[in-house]
Image (cartoon, rainbow, N blue to C red; front, top):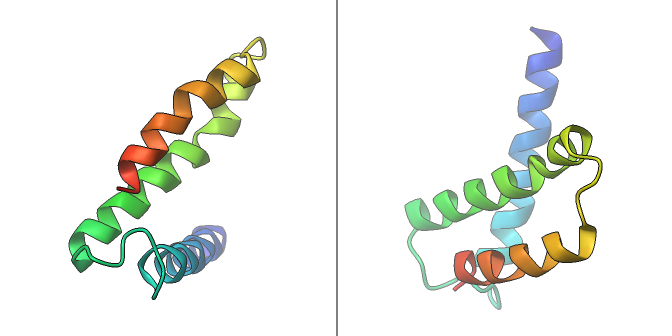
Length: 79
């Protein structure tokens, strides 16, 4: 339980920082409502949080190709 609590607290801090960055005064998502912002933050965290696992599972993953594929996805989430 202590490890799970620590992980959840770290996740909450990461979500709050992203919310401040993305929905703040100059943030890309400042015009969206709260539920939409939260959903988009979850998508970003899932995308980037899963990258280390993908790298472990597929060590031959081509970094440059992956970045090229991720870039339009992130743009879409942020617009």
